[in-house]
Length: 310
Image 1 (cartoon, rainbow, N blue to C red):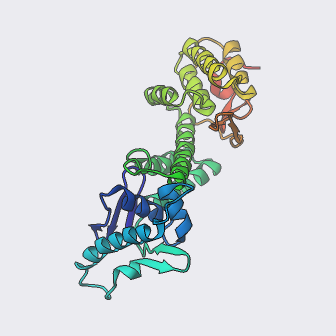
Image 2 (image 1 turned 90 degrees about the vertical axis):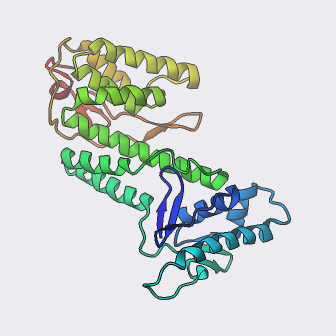
Image 3 (image 1 turned 30 degrees about the horizontal axis):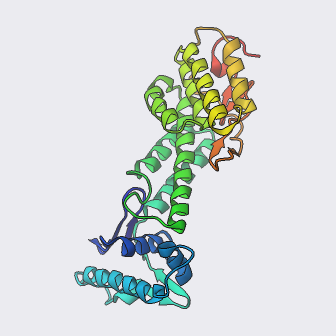
């Protein structure tokens, strides 16, 4: 079984789609697919579909949705003449307390994303930014849109969609960090302009954007970006920028006006844990700046520009 959730929902058995068009069965399949090869309790499915107070008919209605999914699986299995005989109940199992969707040896875009992103993080830790950038770019290419973008989400699917989006942002942050270490500052600017507009309180992205601007010889715009972020944080969250980002701003203020972009900068310490805002959004705080870092990349005379930065 092949499972795609990093965009629209697509589940295929033997190459045949088993994704229903009706909203509620689609929601059930999405939750089972996200937890493929694990038992999903009946109570969790009911809460996903109807919230904290499911109707009295919840259990028989859920059984109807499971039956509809099994009919789609049966149709998909009808074309499988090469393997051992299987029934829909061998793929979508009823187990004590819930249901289990067996993925077999199929491909899951979430598992593939986790594999590639994990390899990219390890490459960054090993000081290999070219490999990290390539692997993280491959991981991010698996996304075709917001996770489960065509599925109505209840409490459990909404939580999973947020988790996946956080994973995507972490991979994106590290891919940009790898590109910065490779001196691709000018190439990043168009992408980062869009990102800081889309995530106006994400401090790590803003720090990387400021560095890319500065190393591209656009010192004034880097300082303007800091002021925009500060105004947004104060207005929307009542917060000042993190101490690390403020240090980066001061470093840029004290630096020379015409930096020469550094290439292949050495790896610095790892990123600082995210700072959680009152609104519930995690903003990754840049690490110490000094000679220091925004994320893991070192910020100091070697990377900020030719002038000594105190």
